[in-house]
Length: 310
Image (cartoon, rainbow, N blue to C red):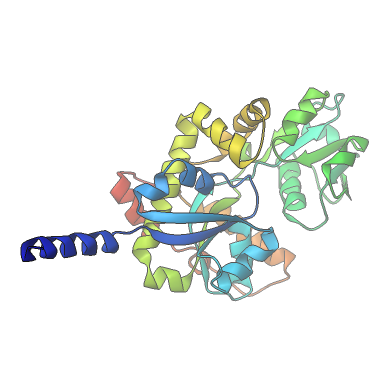
């Protein structure tokens, strides 16, 4: 074999090895966190030279997996914030869903949130994110969550028709409307309260900032696709969430506006997540925005994608 050919082959193989897709693992708590699974299915990770494995985990295990190095990234913003409050070296580096998709549904005779005064609202459990978000919605309409309503933890959606209103996530809002219930409030239409984003260990930020940047970019591309391509997104939802087309379409219509188009982290919303979690965890020490979030790499991603950010 000619020496020149061998040399060229060696250079080619070296080039391929240097540019082989990096393998990462992402933990996501459930099907509502659509951005990164869609980025995987539509090839946005591949465009960024990344081979991604999406792992569905219980929300309470994702931070431990990140801390222990079992996964490289997580998507639940609230869990990352809780980890920071507990002293873990974690950061939020992007946000893809700046508010919650939680929805208040009521019996047919109740037409507004204000009409819930004196009524009972069903939630999944006490003290969790659903109750917190419901309390915030009620305050938006001038109700005192401690005096004007009663909460009952039902543990699941099957018994929620027994009370005046219930808090559900899509596609349960679609199912509720089919049997005569009203959608009287959607959290993402009222306030910012970051739900899905990208969380990393500080060690990853320090050692592989370029990888973090490319993961952020893949997520931004996915969000822009979600907002611009209903049919393609619905197709992904059918596969990822195992929904039929009717339910997937309704879920898209309920959730698509909850995604942003640039991965920006709303400072006011993240501060609200931080303060509410501190209250729940009975933590009084000061924790700053910069303790929770690092937006340096996000800004670089914005420049490379030609985005201004917010």
